[in-house]
Image (tube, rainbow, N blue to C red; front, side, top):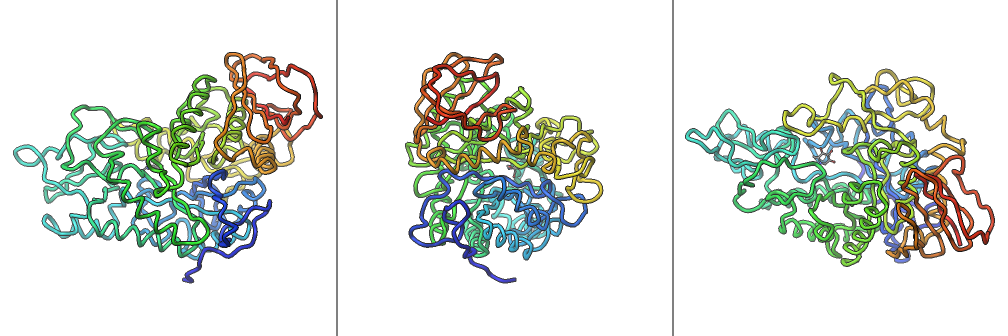
Length: 554
Ligand code: NOJ
């Protein structure tokens, strides 16, 4: 294995400093307005024809991301893992799972992505590992009293014979957060029983993760998406919650195992490591904090760079609610000098085409709204194709662990993880060869990358145009200024620096809006996808169709 520093590639396309560009002039804080595309490796592209996406598959499809115009890619886990939670159960943090390829394949993805001007962020999973991780296996094998058990949360049970869990915590996936071993001790797992929680008070755990960060930074990754970033530190004594409310995957409850103040010391330590490396390596918190103010604590100047904005993701398609979420986000994050982030879909939630309840028109409008906001935006693979949630998966093909736990969540995560359609008219639509790990619907022929490319009405071309306009108008993503303009009920209108105006009609009827003289740059509504400058006009009133976002230039 070659230890490769962050790839020394040249200036990226579009005139922005590329990954690995370590000159002082390159200290552009690229992440403040980056568009970051999430790859869920098992569902992106299959290089070896086993029905499961992999690293060679990603490598072969980097051109799609370059053509789309994103700045960076976040790769969900490809670590060695028994796949009890699709790779979020890590057995070895310094190895790739053979399902996805080799470490050399990972290095090739990094190198070639960098050559194309794309940065690569990888997932890091520090709250828990796999029950097949070497530390946990030894801790179990050595029995009660083993010092290795101190690296996890092992406890005796309650009740006369220790037959009751040590406290009343519930797993996010449903059922008790504790599992009893045959030797009588219980161990804590906030997620599946195959995902034991680390004890972050233990110095060996802290040291190990600092070393893991360095391992991947040395290989050239541009940063980390921190899984359950708010979960590692638990309240002292592991106190009962006292009520039976189920913790949610995207939740905001105040709980003794989430968002404890002690977790911030971990990020201050990680930030010093990130800052030691050239090329602006970043950390992104997947923190489900109860409020935006609590989320902002993860992105203070000496902690992580970004935090996912689940408050925005959870906001309904309602103009007042959206405006309030935007204002609250900009205010809370701006107070600590961090950029806002915006996200509509990921591998844990129902795809926004389906979730927002308005089909493709509304999904496209929501995307153009998101991409006009100041800060950084996250795209989830397949949303650029307008993929809907697959709601018809039969139970026997489902793989989400939460689906199998009695009182758990609704098990809907498989429906957003169906392998992407690339080309052709029937499954596997160019994804690989043969059956895919989750079946693809048989009516996706019009949704493939191939079918949409060059069609000005397609969602793919809308995303490509939107990202091209965003690059051409740097003021769009930058800063934190949104100037709200007067608009009727159900409509949002705002100006961004550089004279770009965004109008969003969330209602089911067309509206007429007085605007200053403007020309249309891009509309989310077919047939107006693609830059269609119509020339400056003094027309005082513009029509915005139902469920439509339009970008205008003054
Ligand atoms: C959040 C991840 O996004 C999700 O997929 C996973 O199941 C949990 N963390 C546990 O790692």
